[in-house]
Image 1 (cartoon, helix red, strand yellow):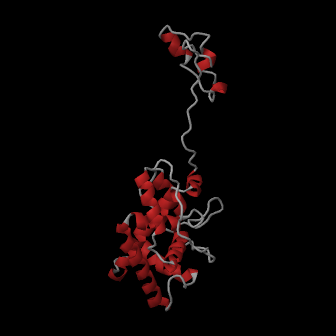
Image 2 (cartoon, one colour):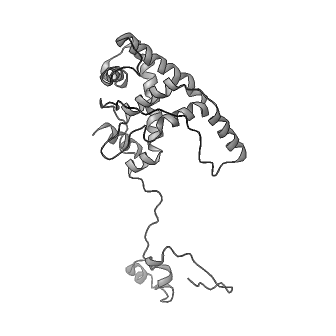
Image 3 (cartoon, helix red, strand yellow):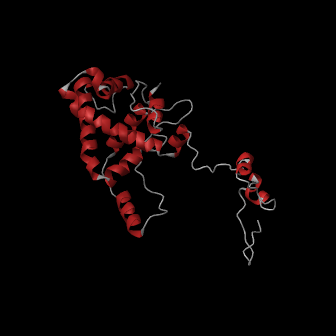
Length: 235
């Protein structure tokens, strides 16, 4: 089972854990823009005002957002059948989350600083400036802590990656792209073709022939019921 299938299985309740493969992100990560609009249906006036205030505020800078984009596509790159994390707008989702839930701000910013520091220590450049293979070398060490053994110097990076991976997966699989990857079709009404004949016979019951085509005819399932002034069913 590959990494994406593992994530999908977690969300569908089939397994309890998942791992990260070493499939890297694409080299041409697009520029990341902060999210500037939200669907505001179903929101109270106070909630709409709060959302708009958050959208106008700035926390993560351009360098941080681009680093998050790279991480996002390392965690969930594009496949032959599904778009990447950046295609699903995950960096913008994380940018909004750190403003909406401020407890995430220092862990995310601190983790990105650790990532740049570690990249500078190993390769004398920022994480974003590293090649794909160099980025993967760092990520491999913090994505598989159980396999790498205890390395106290990596503790901060391990904690950060655990948090960012959770945000990436959440953002991706609550997006339209992620929903399609899951095969989620939304709420679909069941088809009911009436009580089975043997059950009706067992209880000495039968349908009124006049009502059968109105309640059981599935070709009319999309037709909204209508009643006349005397409360007789018309359709």
